[in-house]
Length: 390
Image (cartoon, rainbow, N blue to C red; front, side, top):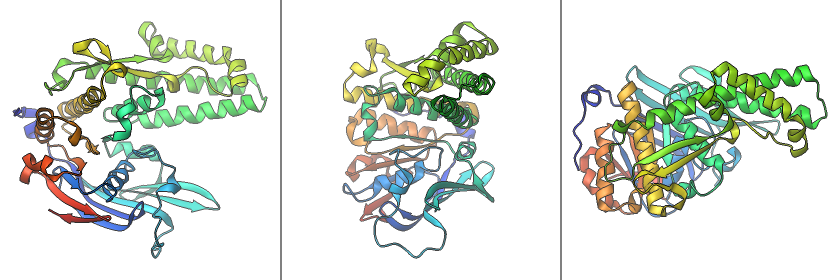
C-alpha cells in the first residue's frame, strides 16, 4: 500500500525533536542524543532502556507520562551522579518547528520534602505543566494500553484529552482548572463548611470549565468522524461516542444554559458528594466509547489485536486531521507496537508515517521488522541504556 501525499502534506514542514538530554532519569545516569526530524527506531533486548526514552519524551507534554508514574519513582536508581542542578531528574530537548527551534525542558525539584515539577520553555522557567501543550503535541501507544477499552473510564478519558490537546491548546489548562476547583469544593464539604456563597462560586467555576471541556471533546469526535481522515484502509474504522452529563446537556442546550443546569446539579448533589467523598457528576466522569464499525461491535468485545488496531486508527486519524488543518503532526510514540501487526498492517502504518512526515518513535526487539523503512528513518540499537547508531 503506497499513499500519495496530498498538496497539504507536500507543503507542510517536517517538525520533530532534534536533541534530547537526560539526567538521572530511570536507567539513564546521563544521555545526550542528537537526531533529525525523521522517524526514529529503537531496537534492543527487553530491559535495554528503550521504553525509558519514550517515557522521557512523554514528559515533554502535560501529565505524568506514559506510565503515569509518581515523579520521584523515575529518578535514576544507580550511583547518584554529580549534581550540577537542583533537579532529582531532568529532561531537556530541542524541537524543530516551522518557526525555528524551541527548547523544552522539565525536571523534578524536591524542596522541604515536597515534590515540584518544573517546566521551562525557551527562556521562560517555572511555567505550569499545561504550558507544554502550547508547544508540543505528543501521543503514545504502549502495551499497557491494550486493556484501554475493557478497564475503567479514567484511562480512556485521558487518552481522549490527549487527542483534544492537538487541536485545542487551552484544553489542558481547562482540565487542570476544573480538577483544582472540584478538589477545593470537596475539601469544603468534607470540613462541614457548607457556606452557600462560597460553594456556589466554586460550583459556577466547575460548571463553566466542565461545559468548555465537554464542548472541546465533542468537537474532537465530530472532526474525527469525518470520513476523509480514515486513511488506513487495512485497519478497522472506529466509531467514537462520548457519554457524560455535560456532553448530554450540550446536545439540547446552548452553553450558558448547560452551565446553569450543571451548576444546579452540583448544588443539588452537595449532600451526596459530602457523604461519598467524591463529586457525582461532571467532566471527570465522561467516558469515550469506541465501536468497530464494520462489525457493529463495541471495542471491549473485540479481540486484543482488533483493539490495538482500533487505537492505531484513532491516533493516526488525529495526526492526519492535524496535518490537514494546521500543517503539523504530533510526535507519536509506539512502544512494542509493530511486532503485533501482520505484514500488511505494518506496511500500511509505515507508509502513513512517511506520508505524514511524522516523527514517530518506534521500539522493538526485532530489527528486521523495520527493514522496509531503510534509510528513511534513524535507527539506534539500545543496550544497557547506551544508544549506538545503526
